Length: 521
Ligand SMILES: Nc1ncnc2c1ncn2[C@@H]1O[C@H](COP(=O)(O)OP(=O)(O)OP(=O)(O)O)[C@@H](O)[C@H]1O
Ligand SMILES: [Mg+2]
Image (tube, rainbow, N blue to C red):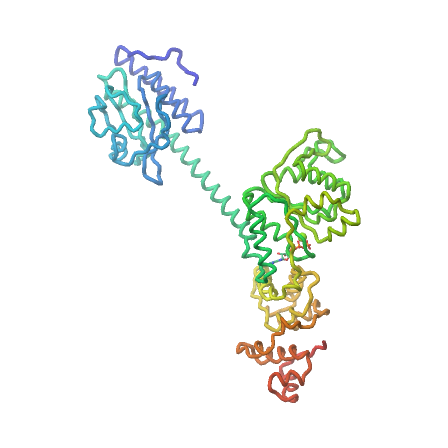
């Protein structure tokens, strides 16, 4: 530090008046140090230095109370021999310092080694010198202890102790400020963590529905690859949940705290794609008013999701290959080569192998991307997920619409008979339309029909043949039971009647009174 006073005093002042002047100057200097910086440790260290050099109080030490453990932790020591003191702590009542903390009173010892409670954990004290320990008080609370050994004017020990109390009063302002800042920092951190948990929660596995073995396999893979920085290529038809999985990979990876940046490669022409991905320098092209970071740079220490990767031009394929291989790139119009630490997750619904064979997609890029492919199974191949998916999607819609939405068993069975070329997204749209059309909030098969997705139906496969079990379900009401039987019987009334142990006349009557619309298959 730069001393403010011209001549540091090392020798003892002759009179009380001189000592008083010296102490006043020191207090002034200390208040100046404390107002300069928010770094408590650093300022305390400087204060102890000034105490030694200006006021003859050597081997100073500040210990502060750790509110969580109730122990005194050493914050600063002015002694080059002090070594590693971060681990040194005193409990209330323990040793001389613990005594000051417990009683909240100063302690003045004429010769420190005469004191039986003296622990000398730090091993820095001069055993023949006096010792002064004063509480650092914030209001009625003791928040720490300031201690030092006066090495002159030892006859004026009480005077020196009063002086130390004044120093402690100055220090407490900084301690308070420091604690306040720390508390705020903790709050901000806690807030950030909790908002992060919310985001992460949205992409936790519980928000991705799939009990089918093929989806369970996908989850298993996601779990495995999330741990590493491997490039992942998510493949699958439109609407199968590729983006959802990309999110899950990022938010379940060690990079979860870092950014997750997305870029839809199909949405932009080549030149814009390049400046979006790599950024541009000021004046690189008309409209480039300012320098701009690209998404690759912004994804540093996080993940970059390149959606619809199969759609990029051959020129852009070359540029992408380079950045994937070397992790290096330049901003558009820039000379500087930049580097970024980015994990790539890409997705496509293209048949990339065919594209490679046809020469439309570079083989080397294909191999770069296809390190770890994850195939999203189409919905028609995992119809067992439909009920849970429909309920999940309806709950989400219900929350948006602020009302209850329910789906009937017969509506669910109807959903099983569609082949869902648009996969989960199509199911989502279908349910949204149905919800809009259902005034009561109950979505039954008629509303599903009205929503118009069901023109194409697939015949029931044996695996989905719900057979007797559904008909025996005691929770099914009369109408549901008749519909189930009709579905089971391919809407042939006589056959359905046999399933229900009814005569054809009885079932015809039920169909009429229960207002069941007959479908042709
Ligand atoms: N397993 C699932 N569980 C819950 N919701 C899902 C699931 N799969 C997809 N979804 C929902 O379906 C919609 C489509 O999913 P997503 O956008 O991830 O599909 P995609 O494969 O990226 O489709 P596209 O190829 O059309 O971009 C989203 O609203 C998503 O939340
Ligand atoms: Mg997508």
